[in-house]
Amino acid sequence: MNKSMIALAVLAGFAGVASAQSSVTLSGSIDAGLRRQDNVTSMTGAGSSRNNLTFAGTEDLGGGNSAFFALNHRFNVQNGTQNGQNSVVGTTPTPAPAPATVVTTQTVDAASQFYRQLWVGLKNNSVGDLRLGRMLFPVQELNGNYDVFGTDTVGSTHTGGLKANLRTNSAGYLRSASFGGLQIHAALGRKDGGGTQGGVQTSSPTAGQALILSNTVAPAGAAAVFATGPVSVALAWDRSGADLKTTALYGSYDLGVAKLFAQYEKTDVNLVGGDDKRFSVSAGIPVGALSKVKVGYLRIDDSTKVGKQSKLGAGFDFGLSKRTTVYTDMAKLSGEEGLTTVNKKTRFDIGINHKF
Image (cartoon, rainbow, N blue to C red; front, top):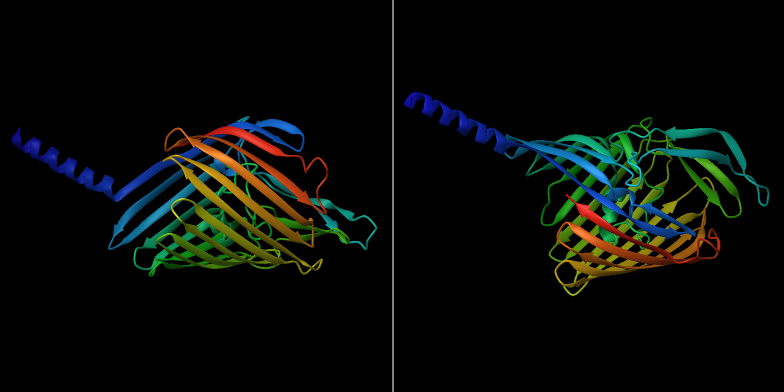
């Protein structure tokens, strides 16, 4: 009897060690509310990233080494469908004022179960980690950290990184460990691996439109991030599969009474000439322990597509707990080109976000 008890205790001890060395977590977010935008009121989430489900896990391999994985799925809260199918209709440039000629082909990226990101990797605590799979590249990986709205809600003043790589298939992403607050990022994809869109559509207000295929070059990206105390600064570079290059500078500073954010992005578009420059500033002002006021300003100067535009955003997050927030936001757009009278009407949303 005593021997049986001892054997059970030993087995229980090994089971405890095994569970401590390996873990799998389920997390995500559900967001629903009402949005008024472009004269249309709908029930939807505040942003595509706010309705998601993530499976993640790590295994301790010993000696400061570990293996890890992540599977991230997005869905539409209003009807339960998966969020992720994209299509691009190509056009060829024509001299102004003639209309652009529509190409008959269409590139479609079929929605996948794990649309947003999917990877497996290895990590060494002293060196860094390597991820392999489908993932955001450095510009897109980092820029959401420097917008008080987190790229979500109608109020967002996120610069967007729209011509940078979004989710890149068949890719590798290397992140160094932090050395005195400095971390280096580098990413590379396959030339024929494609991104989400399969193509990038650009247009000039005067020169028609053009479709740039996404398999022109191998997607690549790099970044340097310095974070210490209340300060965070990131310099990032991206070359999309369409050979569109984006340079970005981001920063934030936590004053205690408010946290300040800034973003700057510049993309050169050689096919149609010109460039796309975007700049934003935003701030979050805490109200108690769980709530905050959000304000921001975005400026776009895109000579290849939308011309000059600006946006003012404001909102309030009322925290019911650390995981549940009721929010409301509004925004106003203005610009010389690319906006209709309907687009310029005040936008508004109100909703509930729950993280788990």
